Image (cartoon, rainbow, N blue to C red; front, top):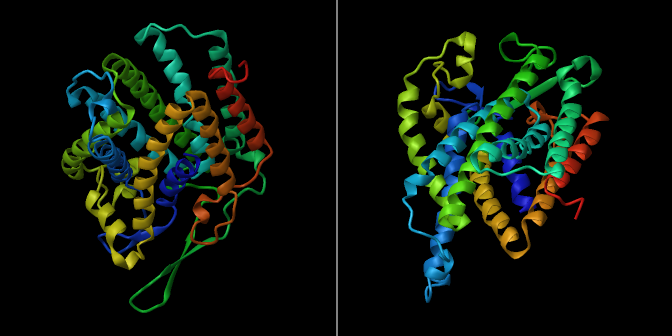
Length: 374
C-alpha cells in the first residue's frame, strides 16, 4: 500500500515533468489533465478484474461469499461518485501542473478529511467529536505552514529553478535539442511564480472538496447496500472511463482563448486535445518514458486500492490511516532528490517550514482518526 501509493503520485507527477513531441511534432510538456484522469480511471477499472477473479476463480465454490450480505444495486447508482472523481482528479492534476510540487500536492490530498467531516453533518446526520474538530484545525495549520514560503517567495531566498536546462534526444539524427525552462520569477504566460503556486493550491483544494463529496456519497450508498469495496472501485472506474470516452469528443472542439491558458491544452488551444495527448504518450519518438509512467500510474492506483482495502479488512482503518501518512513523507522526500536536467521542473527544495508543517499535518490526521487518544 505504501509503495504503490507513493508510486501513484510520483508517476502522475513525472508525466508533467518532461517534454514530448505532440501531433505538431513540437516538444511540449504533457499537460492533458483529462487524459491523465482517463488512464487513472482505467487503473481503477482493473479492480473489477481482481473482483471477478476473486469471486469466480478463487471462491468459485461459493461466489456469493465474496459479496456477503450485499443488496442488489444498479451500477448507475455509483455514476455520480465516478463523475465527482473525474472532476476532482482532473482539477488535482491541473493544480499539480501549476504548483510543480508533488510533496505539497500529496499533503493537500489529506484535506478531504476536512470536507468529509463537515459534509457528514448535514448529509449523514453525524456529529463530529472534539478530537475530529481538533484534527481539522491541526491539519489546516500544517498546510498553511507548509504553503507559506512558496506563496510568499521572499521567504525562499535561493530556492529558484535557475539554469534548469532540459535536453531532448532527437532519434532522427542523434543530436540534442536544448531548451531552457524559465521558471525563476515567472510561470506560464508571464504569471508570477507565487501567483501560479497559489492558483495551483486553490485548484487542488477545490478538487479535494469534490473528493470529499464523493467519499460522503460513497459512504451513504456503500452502507446502504453493503457493497464490497473492490467492486465499488471497479464500477466507478468503468463508469469514469465510459464517461470520459464520451466527453473527450465534444471538448476537443471547444476552443479556449490563449489568455486563459489554451496553449497548454494542446497545439490548437482546445479545452482538451486528447489526440495530442495520445500522440505524446504512444509515439515511439518520445522514448516511451511517458508511456511507462502512464502505465505505472494505472497499475499503482489499482494495486493501491486493493492493498488499502486488504489492510482495512485484515487489520483496521486506523492502521490504513497511519500507513497513508508514510507515503506523504516519502513523496516529499523523493522530490528533494536532484533528478538532473530531465526532471528539474519538479525539483523540490528544503525549507525548514516543510518538516514542521508535515509533522503538524500528520498529528492532525492522527487526532482526527482518534489514533493519538487511543
